[in-house]
Image (cartoon, rainbow, N blue to C red; front, side, top):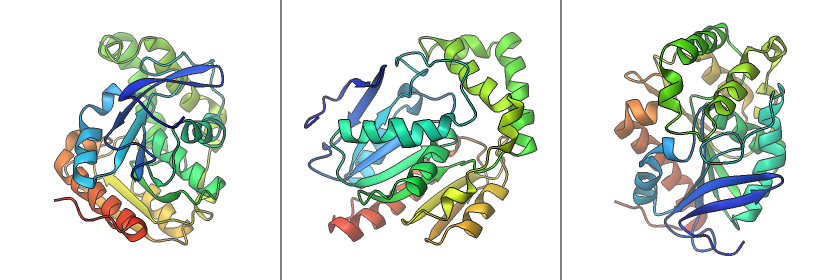
Length: 271
């Protein structure tokens, strides 16, 4: 694909994936590719991608993975390696389909894990850095407890109705994610070995009150990565800093992106 409309659908394998493209096209400027959380979608990013495009001058591409938003439903049940499949099979096809030339992967939660797996598993010279919001590299007890609790909220507490605003097949979205994390086999999920193969700068943003993970995730990245790891801890945020503390989060991500992209592109700083 040589040009992208502001929004549309990508045919990737058997799936139709919705997307938005904000700012310059991949052929005209670096691109920040945003990978959403386990219950996220294009629309759930709200206007954060637009603000990121404004503060960096880069193009920003967001898409909904299969099972989310207006994209095709996912085949369930997901297997414990579903994030590896997204990172090593689906994401390369998405990048090629949009004509990606150079830029940054920016992921939140599951999306952050997918970005880390990609950067560690595929030595792609087009990737200049990865930015990870509330990443998971191993499964913690707090994660499993919170994910078990949210199932009850979904089934009897009104969460299903709220999420139905964002996903055309809300049960496919919710149970595809929730059941995978609660599968007993998933307790052995560990992608820390991928971090040792990341060869680009890393930025991590972690909310101090994250109900799905602790600072242990950050410590693992610092222990395993040979590349620079910039850490921003946001005291006022939980699992979704871009929604709970958008100003601080935008500033940290923009600073990282501008620094990394200027280093490679000679881009001027955007005020």
